[in-house]
Image 1 (cartoon, rainbow, N blue to C red):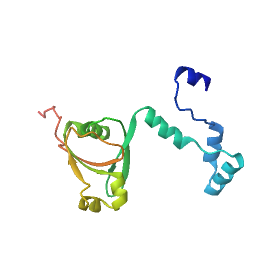
Image 2: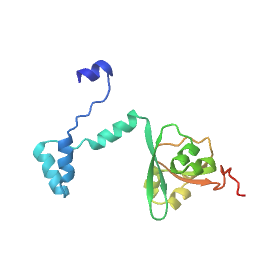
Image 3: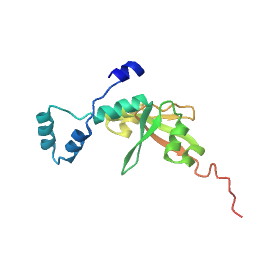
Length: 152
């Protein structure tokens, strides 16, 4: 603590025990994990480390969703929609047309994409849109954009 106070006053300090976290992860059932945390009077700090680490590094998530999967993508705060699309594939950034965006909180509240659209929470955004934490995005792009090599 003294080192942190001297070199980075006000920084977050999170106690961490690798041995405790390993033992907790090795336990198979939730009941065993609960009993172990009660016995040791300790709780896992992994979630706090992840959340605070993301804040310190200025990182955030956006989501893409299809009929059979949902994926979270990590980006820097302040990314524009084309840059975020580029995290999925460089061709998405090169051929970016637009992003169809809804907020995760609105999706959670309304329960479906159709309900969010009906409530007016589904928006089309252009290349200057700054992606926000928790956005659910469907990117539209030109698959041929950025391809400069010509066939002979």
